[in-house]
Length: 129
Image (cartoon, rainbow, N blue to C red; front, side):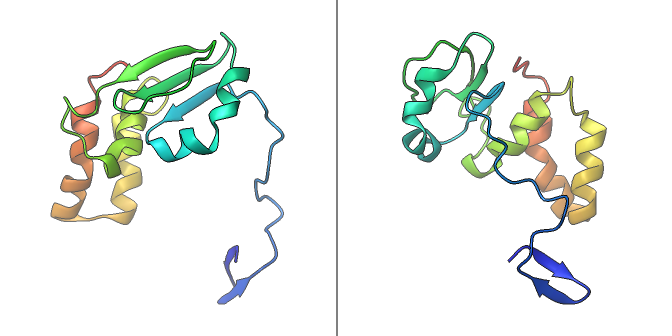
């Protein structure tokens, strides 16, 4: 399933769908949990100094040649399920706090929006890269 088109589900990918990009050595790797590390353990050996790895401090990674930036989500009291959002907040040179609030406000309202925004407020002061 690729989503709804005209009130029906379509199994045909939209023309602008992003498939496998063929990138073997990414520019940035986000390490938020151990599951991805287990699936991609062999990929770490191919990382070079041109790659930035942003790693949760409680998730070990194999040795690699990348530049590694470690984020201690536990000391920030950011829950596992909120790490990806907090990571976006920490990249505030790319995505501003206002942009994140606007995006979250499309999905959440009122108190739920404020609760969803807490990890952003916690992480916004952390310089990730």
